[in-house]
Image 1 (spheres, rainbow, N blue to C red):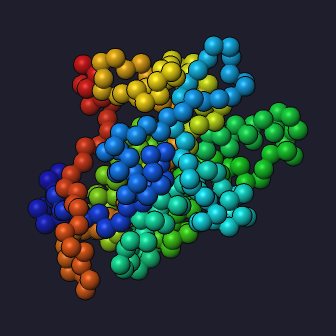
Image 2 (image 1 turned 60 degrees about the vertical axis):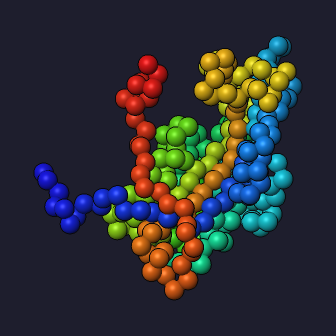
Length: 281
C-alpha cells in the first residue's frame, strides 16, 4: 500500500535540546568530551577472589557518581544501579530544557542490553542460600528490562509512549532512532531517549569470559579496547547511561525562547542481522 505524501513522516530535522551522561569517562557531557579528546583511559582490572586461577579481565566503572544526588536512601535501596545511572543522566538532560509540553505529549525510549544482571545474581544467591523468603519482593520490578523506562516516565511526568529497546550493544543508539521516529510521526512533542546498562558483576563477567569475548590485555588497560583495530583481542565490560532530549527543530525554532543553533539529527540506521552480516564480511 502506498502511503499518501501528506502522511509520510519524511526526514524532519530533530534537535537535541538536552544531554546527560553517567559514564566511566565522565559524569557530565563536558568532562566526557574532554576525556575522550584527551584519550584518557578508564579501564581497570576486575578484581574478584572468586575468579579461577589465571583468569583476568578489565572493567570500566562509573566513578564519582553519587546516587544520593538524585535519589532518596529508600529509593536507592529499591532500585538497581542501572536505574540510578539512568535517572541521574536523564535528570541532567532534562535540566537543560527550557520548557516541556503537557505530560501526554512526552515520550520515553530507553535502550538496555541485559539490565539489572547484578541484582538478579544477588537475588538468586539469596534464594539458594535462604529459600524463597530470602528473595526481595521488589526483584521483578528491579530486573525487568522495561522497568527503567517506566521509572523514568513516572519520575519525570512523561505520560506519552513508554518504549524499551533491546538491541545488544546498539540499544542506546536504536532508542534514539526510535525517539526520532516518534517525533516524526507526531506521536510525541518531546522525547527522552538513550540507553543504560550495568554489567560489571561477577556473574555477567564470568559469562562473557566463558564466551571468550573479553580482552585479556590487563597489563596495558589503555590499549585493551580497540573495536576497529586489526590487533583487537576482545572488548572491555562497562557500565553507564546516556540520554538526550529530542524535539522537532521546527518546534524549537517556534518556541518563545528558542535555543541558538541546537545540534540536529537527520536520520538513523536501525540495527539488523543483515547489516551486521555485511559488516562482518
